[in-house]
Image (tube, rainbow, N blue to C red; front, side, top):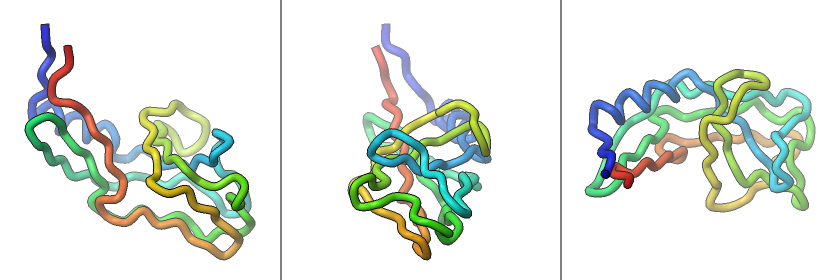
Length: 126
């Protein structure tokens, strides 16, 4: 029997992620750490859909502080974003792969522009 996700259900899922925290993950699987690094809150999400999926995207920019040290080098770049239920420690709720891995050196600033964070959930599962 198939399970079908409705628009109302998708809106409830979106609300689960609002107020949660985005963390930057390096290629070695560890979360970024370093001077001035902190997970950033997801202030709001937009919900859209097509025939097969619902899409949840950030409706405002998510901006990290300016890196006070090298957070990710060219040999261990940021390649994923985790969404956590807490500003520190906590549980991973979702993982989003970046299309291109990026280093982050002292003085750099990571910004996730509107619509760049995208979570896809199928409308129907079997």
